[in-house]
Image (tube, rainbow, N blue to C red; front, side):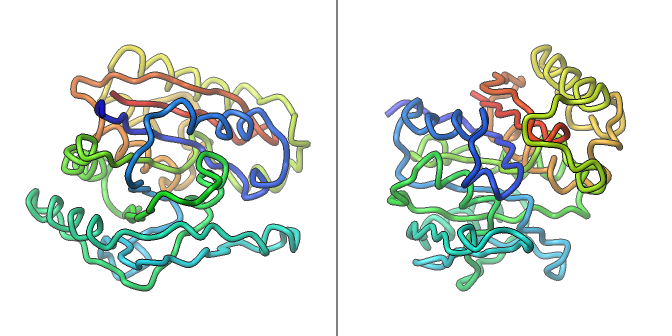
Length: 266
């Protein structure tokens, strides 16, 4: 089996599980484009060590429950389950790899899969038959720390493990809730200027610029008032090739303000 890429995907609203959109259509076809992994290691913006005593954790449950970590959505969404098995052995492998690079992480035998994991995975691998392990971000840590996390995990790509960072290339919920735009609304310039800058810097292999895009890119702070949803990008980049080799697999926008970009690193 050839080496798997690492991926970053924008998971958008939980309603992507139910509502038609270009991003939903793309993710629904993505699994067929990839070599089938034996397991998935997913780094979600919604699993944040900064709110868990500052300690990074990896899920070690053999049967992780589906977490509905949101409110105000239809009952149909709360009824959804993604019963993928866990992989305690992979969780221990992650602990060992990170420890070998001086990065402390602990195994959590109870935590399940949040919507940053199960919503996109329910589209990519709808049969839920590939084991899934989740690793936390730490929103109080630097972009470089998250990049190093990914670098430590790179050997998993040769072990048939698909490394996925799940966040959002733009994520300003205050603006989103204030605007209340339809799902197919066009993006304003302050969103497209940011995503276009990211795409250009990715294409140029400008690693340091991308790591510091919130400060350097046009409207960086407007698109990321908090860093949580861009940090999984840096983990996926770290697990990819050095020097940076990125391919934008998909670009679309939902609700005008949520860019749904997907990147592969190989």
